[in-house]
Each structure stands twice: as structure tokens, then as C-alpha cells.
Length: 87
Image (cartoon, rainbow, N blue to C red; front, side):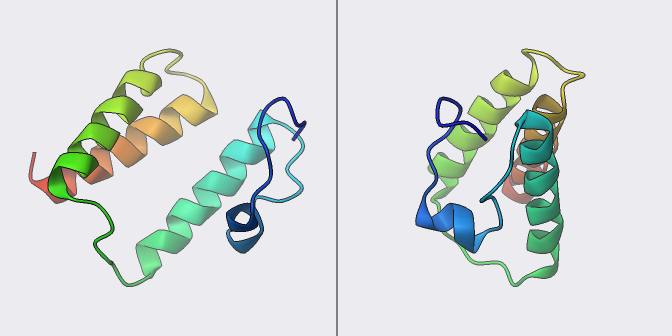
């Protein structure tokens, strides 16, 4: 993707996000990453309060343009976080 959309970081390379050219490819790469994450061992990296805040932000983002691929991805991830929180 262009520099004005996102800056590349070492984590981008680690998680396969290097070389995406546009938002559609970015959404596809993130979707693949989420699918991979479903098969991996879970590890707590956030407190319950942080996870709830992240789910709220993702949910708000998802409402901006519901048909858009990134918004659908955000909604899916928010739902998974809420589910794990027991909400």
C-alpha cells in the first residue's frame, strides 16, 4: 500500500502484510491472518478492560461503512472479542 495509507513495520513482514497494494488486498491479508489466528494457541495479551475497549472501537469503525471489507472484518473481530469476554 502507499506510504500515505500505512507505514511498514517489522510486524507487517512477520504477519504477511508487506507488499499489499491497496485496501482490498489489505483486507484480504488481514482476513487470512485472522483465519490463521483461529488455528493458533490463544495467549492473553490484553486485560479484559483493554479487550472491551478494542471491541468497542472496532464496533464503532464497523458502523462507518458496513458493506466495506475492512468494516466487515472489524465487525467480525469485535464480535469474536465480545464473545470471548462473555458479552
